Amino acid sequence: MEWFNRSEADWLHLDVMDGVFVPNISFGFPVLEHVARLTDKPLDVHLMIVQPEKFISQVRDLGAAVMNVHQEACVHLHRTVQQIHEAGMKAAVTLNPATPISTLEDIIGDLDVVMLMTVNPGFGAQKFIEHSLDKVRRLREMINRTGAHALIEVDGGVNRRTAPLLAQAGVDVYVAGSALFGKEDPVAEVHELKCIIDNA
Ligand code: ZN
View (tube, rainbow, N blue to C red):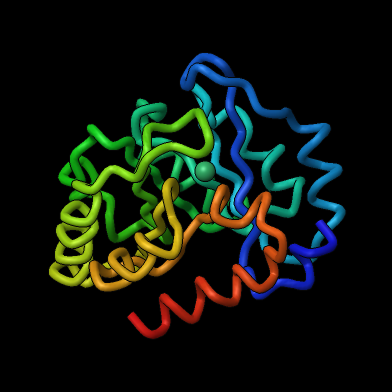
């Protein structure tokens, strides 16, 4: 966490997996609480879990800035988004690679962030799904056409090659995992990625 706090990263994105919605298990709230205390950067808590609405108050108590739920995991998405806002957090809704952006057409104006999975959720270090670029473009078009203000975030396979392509397609927020972790100088890598994005 020491290098992360020194870096130019704007948010800390945390993946919560339950072994049901996705095949893997990451960590639960006790670990999240510990991690949340180690940084002053805004937390973007990505819940890859079923029934994420059950955990709104727990995510709020972490001090999270953004609560990120999957469209596929929410039967009553509009209500869940309202509850996230009532709890004082920004509402982010994530789409899996196979979920069309048209499912958000009637709620896009209520969202602060739309996140597109650019790999299948549940594991790190996966290959970027190239079709995602077209999906980003179509989402950008929907946001512009409806006058919505949602930021476009992408999660999965962000690196020096894909970041400029994503930037040109209209992405605002980039989640980087494998591109940073294990790098000799991750602080420099964050800087490099941000320069690449700014110049795309
Ligand atoms: Zn994530």
